[in-house]
Amino acid sequence: MVSLFGRGLVEGVAKGEMVVSRQALSFLGGVNRFTGKVVDPNSDVYNKSISGKILFIRCSVGSTVGAYVIYAICRNNLGPKAIICEKADPMLVTGCAIAGIPLVDGIRLEVPIGTKTYALVNGAEGMIKISDKEEDIC
Image 1 (cartoon, rainbow, N blue to C red):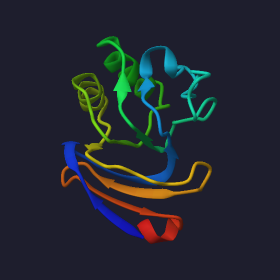
Image 2: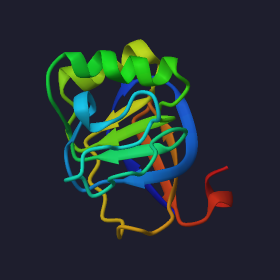
Image 3: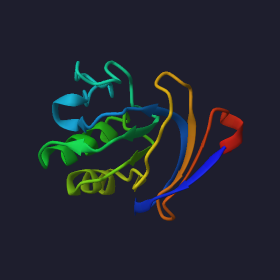
């Protein structure tokens, strides 16, 4: 298990399986708000569901409407449990804040794509625990 510390931006604690992307993600047009799946064919997590997962992205891209899409995904009970990123922009912070999604930035991950990984996220403290074993993060 690895413990990492970043900048806590939106409070809350969540744990679960991760979806790890090495790319930026646009919530507007990149995530289907009715299914919770990534629909951007250029994404390295294309067709994966972020619903109920801990989502790691490099950063988010897009307009302020992306914050509404994050909120809408959560209103449909399809949102991620938490988001971890290298650099959060105001749109991502706003979307997570109104949707109640814990958010931590300043984290760089080197997890091999396709590796099943689990995380515990504490948005207030900016703390992340990552393991390949689910029982390690309980």
